[in-house]
Amino acid sequence: MQLAIYFHATQALKKAIPCYHKVLSFKKGHFDALFFLGLAYQDDGKPELAVDAYEKAMEAQPLSTAVQINLGTAHQMIGHHAKAIRCYENALCRSPDNPTLYMNMGTAQTSLGQHDKAVRCYEKAVALKPDYEKAICYLYRQYQKHCEWKKAQPLDVRLDALTRASLNRGERPEETPFLNISRHADPALNRAVAHAWSHQLEIGRSSDAPVYSHDTRSLAEGIIRIGYLSNTFCDHPGGQLLHDLFGLHDRSRFKVFGYSLGPDDDSRYRRDIRAGCDVFRDVRDVDGETIAGRIYKDRIDIYIDLMGHITDSRMDVARCRPAPVQVRYLGMAGTTGARFFDYIVTDPVVTPLDQASFYSERFVHLPYTYQINSQKFPDGSTTYSRTDFGLSDFEFVFGSFNTSYKIDSVLFGTWMKILKRVPKSALWLMGGSEILETNLVREVKNAGVDPRRVVFSEKLPKAHHLARLPLVDLILDTRIVNGAASTSDALWMGVPVLTLQGAHFASRMSASLLHAVKMESLVTQNLVAYENLAVSLATHGRRLNEARSALAAGRFCTPLFDTALSVRLLEHAYLEMWRRHARGVHPDHIQVGESTPMLQKPDGVNDGDKRA
Image 1: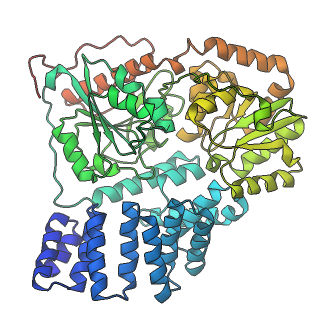
Image 2 (image 1 turned 180 degrees about the vertical axis):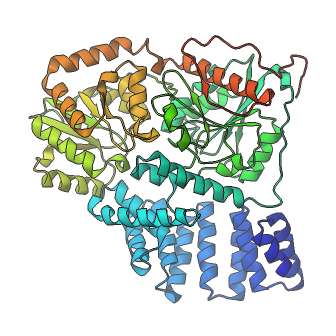
Image 3 (image 1 turned 180 degrees about the horizontal axis):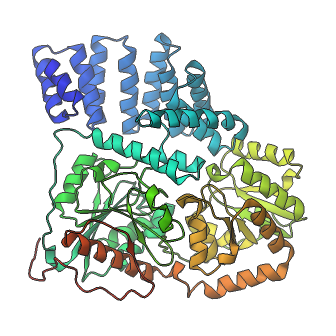
C-alpha cells in the first residue's frame, strides 16, 4: 500500500493503479485501497472507473463524507450532475458545515443551469470559510454574469488579495487566467496568473508519462502536417469563425488534421469543418496524454491549440509536447504563460511588440488582424422590423450583443450618460435570465433613465441574429473584454461598432477588427472620447451615414472578410515556423508582411520522402 501511495504522490499513475489492485487482490474490501484507487482514476482522467471504486469504498464505510464528496466529483467529471448533487446532499446530512460540499454542489447546479441555487451554495461556502479562494472565484463569476456589481465589488478586493498572495508564495491561484483577464486589463498580472497555471500543469505531469522526441526530419509526403485542436468544431462562435479555414488550406503544402473535443451537433459548421479536414478525429472522451499520443503517431509537425486557458481546455495535450512546433491561436485572448507553446498568432494592434515581455509565446504578427472570418449572409427566409423587438418607438438604437459578463459598472454608467444625451434613443441588449434583466433594470433606474429605453432580446440562431443586426444604428462595444465574433458579425452586416482600446489583448480585439475594415475612426482611447463620439454619431446623421457608407463600400474589399487571404497569411506563418525548426533556430517573433510572396518549399521538405 505504501508503494502505491508513493507512486501516486509522484504522479506515476500507471504504476500506482496496479499496486492498488494488488492490495485489493489480497483484501477485497480494503477501504483505503479503494478510496485511493478512485482518486488515482480521477487523476488519470477515468471518472467512470473512479465511480466504481468509490461505490465499493462506500460499501466498506457507508458514512464516509470524503467518499461521498469524491464520488460526486467523479459523477461531475462524467457529466452526471444530478447524481453528483445527490452525493453532496447525502454528505451534508452528516457534515452540514462543510464548505467544500457547498462549493461542489454549486458547480453541479451551475452545470444544470440552476444559477440561483448555485449562488446560494457559493455564498454559504464563503460564509463558512471567508478566504475560500475557489468559492470566491465561482461566486464572483456568477455575480459578474448577472451584473450583480455591488455584491461583486467586495469580492473583487478579496480576490485580488488572495490571487496576489498565492503568486507571492509561488503557488497557483484559484483564479483562472480567463477570469483574471475579464477583471484586469493588466498584461503583466495576466501573464503571472497564466504562468502559475501552466507551471502547475508542468510539475504535475505524471513521472511515467511518455516523452516525445522531435528531430529535424524530412516532411512526410513533402508537406507539413498541421493539427488543430478545439472544443468549438460545432455551431459555436468559434466554429462559425473557423469553419472555412480547413478546406481552404493549400493541399500541395499542408495536410490538415482536426481533433475535436466538443459535441457533434451535426450543424453545417460541424459538417464543413469535418469535410475540410483530411483527417478528423473525435477525441471528446479521451484523456490528454492519449490525445497527445495520437497527435504524435499522426506525426503532426505544427500543433495549433484553439482554446488556451478556458473552461474544459486541454492544455495537458500541449504539455506533452506531441509536435515539434506548438502554436496558440484564437480561444482565450491572452498568453498561456507556458513554456510548451512556441508561438501565438496575433497582430500588431492586439499585441504591440512592446508587450512581448508579457507573453511566454513569440508573436506571429499577421498584417491586418489576428481573427479569421468565415462569414455568411442571412439565409433570406427571415426579415425583421424594429416592431418585432419592441423598438419601434425609438429614433436611434444603440446595441450591444456581447455576453453579459463583459458588461461592467463603469461602462454601463457611460452607456446611461449616452442615453441621457441622446433623446428618443434606446439601448438594445442580450438578455438571458430574469435575474440579469432585473439587475440591469435596477441600474437603469438608479441612473435616472426610463427603464423602457433598455430593451432585452433573447439569443437567436446565427442567421436570425445576422438578420436583426441592421436594425441597430450603432453598436457600443464592451470595455475590459471586447466583442470578437460579435463585432465582426456587426461589421459584416454593415453596422458600425464603437470601441474603447484598452491595455491587453482582450480589450483591443475590436480595435484590431476595425483597423482591418479601415474604420479606425471608431476606435477611442478613453471613456470620455467614447461617450462623446457615441453622442456625436447619434445626433449628427451625416457623420453616421458616412461611417455606414464607408463600411458598406469596404466590406468586400478589406482584409477582415477575405477568408482566403487570411488562410494564405496563416500558411506563410506556418511555413516560416517550420523553416526555423528545420534549421534548428529557436522560435522568434514572425512578422508576416502585407505583400509577403508565397514562400518556397521550406527546409526539410523532400518530395521523395513519402509516409503513410
